[in-house]
Image 1: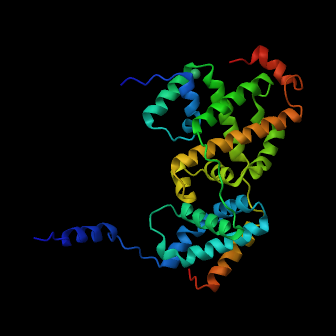
Image 2: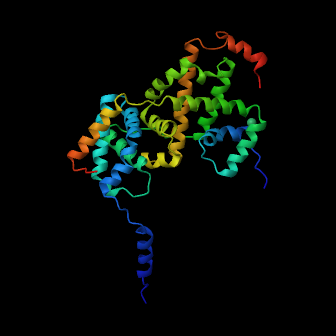
Image 3: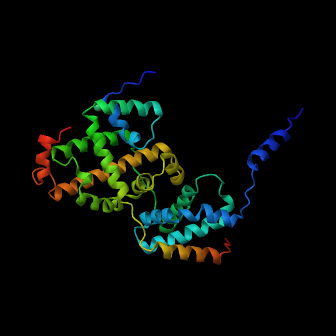
Length: 218
Length: 83
Ligand SMILES: [Zn+2]
């Protein structure tokens, strides 16, 4: 006897259609997609590194999202969906190929960062990332990262997306998000610590370092 | 339940996952327990945390958000958006 699917279908209809949304699709777009405009704009800016290109990219992203609105799964992360469209639009326009070295070991990157810290400590640069001069260099360092690393850093560290959401947006495995993120962070730290050394912010140049050895070693 | 014991190497390998809130609750607790007592890993934790703060603070806003919003709305309306 064939299995009767009707009760299951009824259940699914009941769950999915439990409370029909009284809003029109356009109203849902207004309520769910438009509030992410500032975040999408920031993301576009980080991809293009140019205000007017970012503006065009945002227009195109929202127009595409509006036209594909019936494909958006209600209840899923709208911001992540918009980021996906934004990114795909950008990389199609600029025809950039995503090339990443095959070797990706996240935990080695984490250990590498630990080694950087030890070196920074030796140079009296323990607080390097709190220095105003270095803070100002962070943005330039992010802009200079190769695209595959820059986009994970921007999504996770600037836009506070989880590894999971970043993986969905970038259409790569979560483990790849993690290894690119860690590599990107280590590259940034290297660059910023070098920047601090070149700027003469290391040991002996600042009196607070002297203080640190005696009164501040908790 | 016993908290898992971790050595410094294991903690340093997972420090970023820990700071990102990506560890399982058990593992997170184990890392936290180690950090409290380890004067080798604790400074490392603070260093990475200050790095992540500086990174997060580097977030850049567009200089003309209102113009962008107006233009997006105009583009959508021209395409039939009615809300
Ligand atoms: Zn330790």
